[in-house]
Length: 601
Image (cartoon, rainbow, N blue to C red):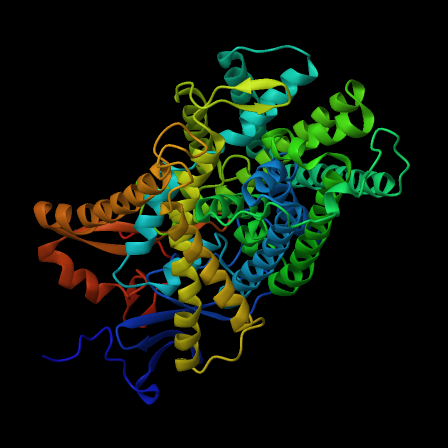
């Protein structure tokens, strides 16, 4: 039996290129075995890039404009990294690790993980600096075969789990805390829906102004963490009478360290959650002028600033609050710190206001970043109603993805029944458990991140075959391996049972429920792909083929997968190139206009 064509790659000398008729020196398509690369350049200052033709076409002019400057790059990351994690998770991490020393060490691990992850994303962005959507693009280009498998799987996962309920509910609880009222479950949910609706309206109404809003709120977050850090130094200096022995927790710092694998994995999941957001700006690459230098410099600033402040805030917490008290604080870590230093009353009200602002900034930043991922999924052509996902009319914003985010998030706020309650401030939050929801999303995330890390080596190999120059940034292999190992760890360790048996975890149900459901989501992605790509076409008698479609005069374009009857497939393939562009006798039609010959997806 011969070697499958996918693996039987031709020698480099056999790589061929076709040229445009109007300029023989201007390469248009490159063939490398079964892979076909299109060559394109955008107006954001990035160079010429090669991408596999299965991917969405490059938008030479960003229909969303070029409003993402260096400050916005910093604060898009800052706003997602500093959500509620630093105000809530330090107590949980201390409880799980068992000691001050190991808890601080875990925060240092988080810093290295953020640096490694940032380096991986930056290298991938260097290969595709004219495509927004970050991991959508990177998975699409690393795994173009089987055709559309990763785009369809990632689309299914992203649409099903496209919600941001946790921070909306956190915001609601802190708003009720400011009002000094104890709300009912439905009052909490009602305010959460109102807050998320306000955030959605802000980002839909105006792209530039919503980015400015993230910059302002990000600045408030930085000032808040600086204030907590300075307060910690004051406490350590013995200037706070309420804290008689500020160094108590740092003596015998590793006393009580746990060795339980489940506890350590839960602590790591919380660390990853606290640092997530370091790659948010990569979702807007095609909206950034000179994207790679801008991201390299200012993305690194965002990670560095947040990392230093995280460590200083933890030191401040540990200097003011006894270890046993802080370990029990769970989601009220910052509140316990303020009460220890300033006493209860106005100081806690001020904290509630700051956390509320932080949560709203997180909602804006996540909405902006996730909308670009969903829009890029739509541009791959694998979702129905292509124009709905891609169009930026009437406000110059991706309204389709924003509407999806709003609908799914509202469902996840309202639908789940009261379950494992946890505290924010002094208010019980009856919800299905923030960690369960976060972990349900993070498990498939971990699987896709493993694929993305491996994909870096695949893309490196292909770029070398094409005799491409070294990318503008190349991650150290140690960063890539560390990122990969951490992702493998996060998808393997949730299966380790906690102390006390399978029902002794943070929630009342089976400890690995979210891991099992996460695996189920991945299996459903594969089933959906098989049905959509093979079963339905075979049953209905058609084949799916890509077609390039111009959406509007703002520069928006997209792939659309059309259903070509089997009898007409040969004619279609003869009239279109691999990227879906209509061929003409004198070359390629670059307009991307609809042919009108075949049915829509």
